[in-house]
Amino acid sequence: MAANAPLLQNDGLAQGQAATVLGVLSEGYSPTGKVEGAGDQRVSMVPEVAVQLIKEGYQILIEAGAGVHAGIADEAYTKAGCQVLPRAQVIQKGQVLFSIEPPVRDFGSMKGKLLVSWVGRLLDKGKDIVSKATACGLTLIDVTAVPRITIAQKLDVLSSQAKVAGHRAVVEATHAYGRF
Image 1 (cartoon, rainbow, N blue to C red):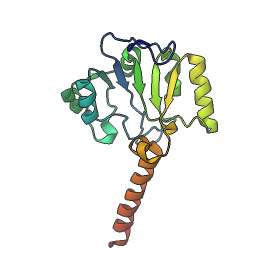
Image 2 (image 1 turned 45 degrees about the vertical axis):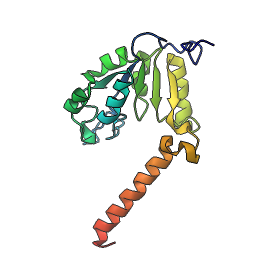
Image 3 (image 1 turned 180 degrees about the vertical axis):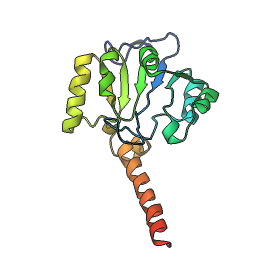
Image 4 (image 1 turned 30 degrees about the vertical axis):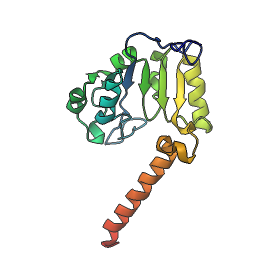
């Protein structure tokens, strides 16, 4: 098998050509909660990671405002070497898209793309997301599918989020009770 052969048949990514274009989408967070599906404050890629990927030859597109609610300004992404663009352009130009929550409303414009997201494919909601993505010609990579084993722990989103939640609980309890 040739080194530049696609991993999956018809994966749609150009092999052995120009840099693969990665797109990072905003989670659509609404501080007022008045927007349907109020989104998430987190962002799926921080500038430090973008710098490393750019050094590896990837081109990174960031949706304008994607990191704002996570405390990361667009300027930080620009300094890291990313292009900050409107959502429609990130979806159009990106070959591999990243989003914490799958942006189901945009699946129609993602035909032939690859989306890395928190799908939860074994849950009812996740099964619905998978069927909608399949109908739209979108390939999903479910980050919750990483095995929960020691060697894969730094890639396991379930373990990492549980650890963060535990740390936050301790900080909040210390604040509430005034001692630890």
